[in-house]
Length: 479
Image 1 (tube, rainbow, N blue to C red):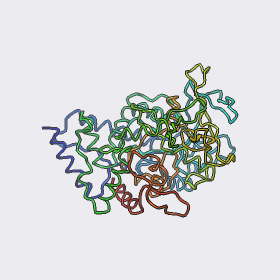
Image 2 (spheres, rainbow, N blue to C red):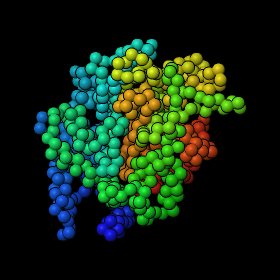
Image 3 (tube, rainbow, N blue to C red):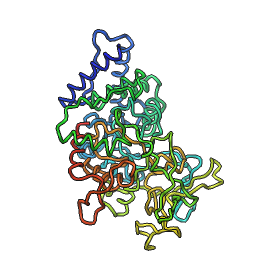
Image 4 (cartoon, helix red, strand yellow):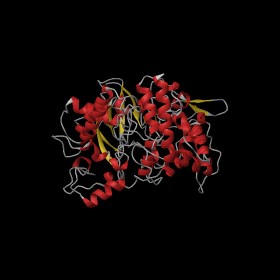
């Protein structure tokens, strides 16, 4: 009965919050305790309050940065470009502007154009079974066996039920994530376990809305996800928002989930984006007698990561093919060799594979066809000279996860622009356009087929109509 009372009281709370459009992020979260609060709950509230203080203040032995330096309370604990620009104009000596995130940390006078796009440098060790290679296939791995990539700073909201953490899932719990952040971004040493526990307790209590809190509390109490009522069912939506919810169910739910909004719920759709690779890094295809080439797909039952083309989109921006929000700054140009094991004696494949283009022009993005009529393409399904970010593969060492990233929660998404792992899209409308034009058409199992006319001359057919995109945006604003 206690569980049912929790549902009733919480549903009522977030129903009222839905009417008011209220959010429950770190900027306005308040620890409260009623008269029936247990001693354990009081202790938890106190721990979270202490964790908020640690989150806001730089820890001893650091470069002056606190967690809140990059996870800005006023911006839903994300790092927004407008905040960086304003802070640079007002206080260029702020700890945010540390050389570790300069465009060139060794420059006599550092500049921060990447940071002004909301990007921070993430330095990661290569898995033992990987090397960095050049276009000729020569191993050029740095002596310290580390590589760096540029990534946005995600909000901490809803981390109570959205693990693993970081875009590549390299952190499996909030305690180790907090220590890694202090080490990597604040250049601090080992933090006392009690302090890390407090920071984690605070982060677990930050939510994008009372509806997200409702899901988290039931999950913490051991409720299976399938038994949790849909917390969005009580949102009072107008006609456009209701239509937008239908579009979400059609086009977004398969990968971004239902109740939590961050779980892959359609495994067929997930697995449709993982391909068997040949030794040269290109995808294996089966060609039917009618001449139709189908990529050989490999199920990934234990993975929540996807290569939906986000890194390839940035590659196209860097090549000047498409205009993106992050195009004005340079990204790394990596190729990788994968081996069978850490001895690095037996190569498995090189990614991305050297393109074989239809015209022979190395800048052509259209691939050539092999003798069977199948396209000669790597995991991006297109010609690609280099990768700006190998994603999950840099953690797992698995070539099947090349350029794959965690599927994020869409709760509160309207308040956390820019979008994708490297801030390639400035607005939510641009993000929806990209899904409609380039991502959904490549996932037939979703059912959002590209049947709508292009919105600009020479553009691709779209999976969503202008009206559907408008309605979806309205619903995402409420989510």
